[in-house]
Length: 404
Image (cartoon, rainbow, N blue to C red):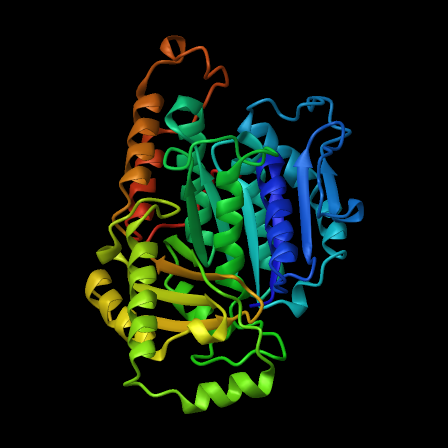
């Protein structure tokens, strides 16, 4: 799937940088550098390795209340600054070819003021500008980030989930660390999941796809909207060094009764089960998913048809849905066999329920009794936060005015 990336805030921007790094390191080509990052601050951030300088945009650098550190936790200020600087953002969009992409992925830390506030405004703006599907990779705060981060995340979810075509959640409570830091392996793990999932279908000319898939399979899987979660597993294998003719010959001569094929099938099924049962990007009850998709990536010799079918049948039973799509992503020179499983429109997500309940409790607490870490006064009614629970359940909810 050809994908354009938009990183919002320091965390979202650095995550986009990591995704581009993984794309380059693994020889994939699903963004082709088609990315833009934006932040609110007086001075531009450094430390980017993959995003060129002309694809970085700074918002609010002339605003009197914006400091070198940005909006300092003020979500309402982030919203106002972003709305005022939308013309600057639109001009920056000219640096990426969204119309040549199959979709747009916005990456933002929903617990931060910039990620949640600016992210909500930019998601709405992008949805209005383009016909391509708009997805959000939203980072959820961990408990140590404080009540205000939980409140920001709840408000952001209420705005973003109904607006985006699907919201892929990444839970920092499940994946502890400092997102975007240079030494954070968990962010590298998330970037690997994103690259493996969205690169499927963007095949090398020499690859032979046994179960071909394209962008329409991803779009169809994410079409129900709501919250999505990604699972991943990998194992080391021998790269396929044979030429194209030899691989084609082996592909057409394989027998489904061959003992080696049975071994390969068991390996594939085990890997898919591991991907679905280990840490998802956000913990969820997979039986509450409306649709699912599984992608197997690695040397063509390791991509077993029997394994695919067996894994698909298992996944149908596990997710309690027949809306299961599967495809392979042949990588002849890869020494890793990878399985990524996407669960879309999951309605049983305890972590989001917990964040919303915490936000309700924060909103119900009088201003003078709030913890000192929540210095910004929040004026929204508790009822508005409670409505976010309907979004987590993917019931009908109107677009939020949280970004107004």
